[in-house]
Image (cartoon, rainbow, N blue to C red; front, top):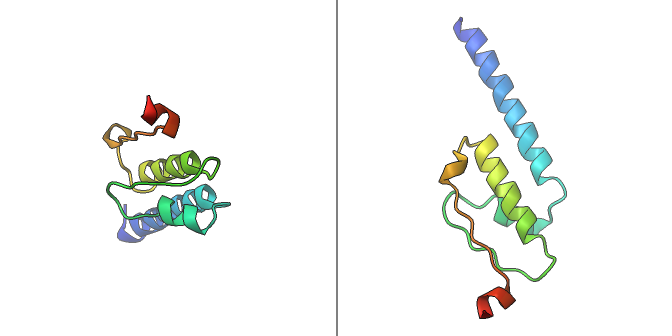
Length: 87
């Protein structure tokens, strides 16, 4: 491939990845967006019941896998409820 063909293919791939990311983030509120787009590394999400924590974490993982090419086996997610923590 020529340099221009590689550049066009790369630009197209970047655009597709950005479209996926935008679809994943659509509908999140400001707090959820901050958590979903937090820099790479450990993230602690504390919020009340029904606030969308699981959704935010799922979207964060999807973005890392699809856009940032993180291997799924490199992700560890631990969640628990207050009731489970008390047990």
